[in-house]
Length: 368
Image 1 (cartoon, rainbow, N blue to C red):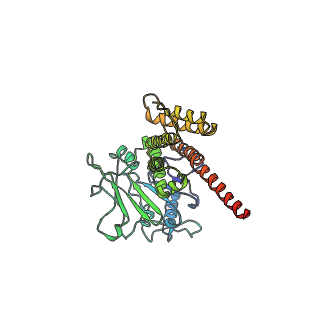
Image 2: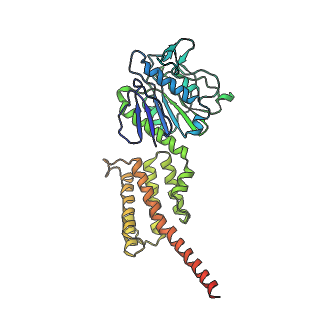
Image 3: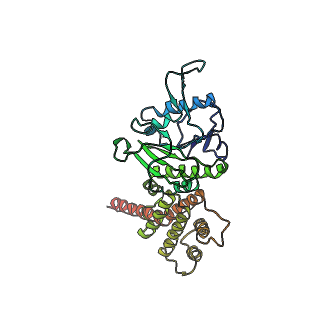
């Protein structure tokens, strides 16, 4: 997932070839093509508005106003609300055609106008305490909201579930505690999705950023869809019981439930070992060793299976492996190992059998 992060506080916190960063105070022409996710953090550290900040906001507005922008780019846009100390509204509009970059005061320009461009209807986004209470959002947005639900929150959208212009908006959560409110919603536009979340604690920026990246990945994988994961990794020739377990593991992966995904993948492997004829009633490792000794799998498959078993142990035995954490890359490795394993065990034998059958039929025709 290639991401563009526009933030002063998150700048450079995570080193990755898949993440590009821009600070609000450093202007450069925005090129949004090729990104799967935009993370726009509206938390500003400067007391005064920097001209380059306004220019970047204007370019965001211009990009998002383009017809079909989110439909042509499979984007997940995460917008984090800014500081409660500022309203982020400007009396000046940036003129992109002016050589000296003069600002004109002939119309109002709000820093959140780019969000208006993707939310249907003419209702203006205002910052105030919210008025509605919605069910708490699902994982992983829930993790973010639970951590920052008492921070300064001020995004208010005049949401009316009965209004036609609100049909594509899904409120995620708003929680009240000590007079504070937490408003979050998502809005689908074509193939794109805009997610608006409340502000975070800048003193906890590392955790906040990692949670937001996880949210981005989760939405991106859900955009790709479970069906695409099944099509990519499930071998058609797998027996149904093994297939069901593996698919459940893929569904858990799509929703960032990494431990659950690892355990279901391990279960699919054990189901396969029994299906292949392993008689050992003990540990899965013994069953895999038995298959290898009988020549039913080769050394590479045995070692792949052992990797799946080891990661499964991390998830199943927190006491013994307390210092181990399962990452997205770990789960993806397990899924890819199992795809190769199941392909070798179920798909290749069938293809070889079908090929031999076709050759025999051709030979009989030639003999006649």
